[in-house]
Length: 215
Image 1: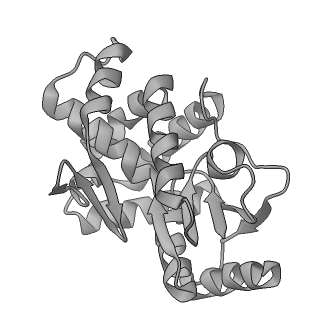
Image 2 (image 1 turned 90 degrees about the vertical axis):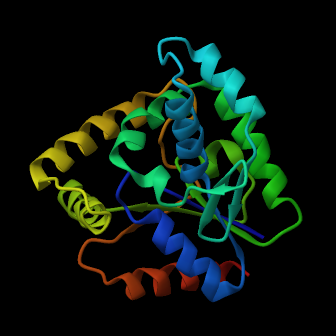
């Protein structure tokens, strides 16, 4: 069974999807981390971001693995590294690259084949897994999402302020909706879940209930 959780940046998709997968005994697939891994590799290799073919060529050579809540890049654990602001700032070059996206979608399908999986991202229910048994669109108000992102960055030791995080997020929202490949949109058969005012456990309970009603 495949459960997709899509939604905008800062909606809590990764942490919620991880918890839902653990509760159900499913595998967790963090697709956003896969694009971040490609971006991190691009930074390290010094690719010219104005030349998408360079990043596409690099992506073909990378070995990207997602093992529970860990992200491995050519065998190196980059779980924390891919969440740094400098990586976030260039992840769009990987996400907007049609060749990179095609490679990662195929990899996502391979990782999910024959397994019970909770997968999260931006286009999981619309592109990667259009026939998923349960689709969820997880969202929250811009202010709530920015506060969560701010807390994540502070835990990583970065010094930022809420207004800067909100401005960056609003720019990303516009970019995500306008992307030429894999744009953020809610699948027609997805159930929308707003998380404002809900505790983390309450959100997880709600999603587990939705999945249980499907099985």
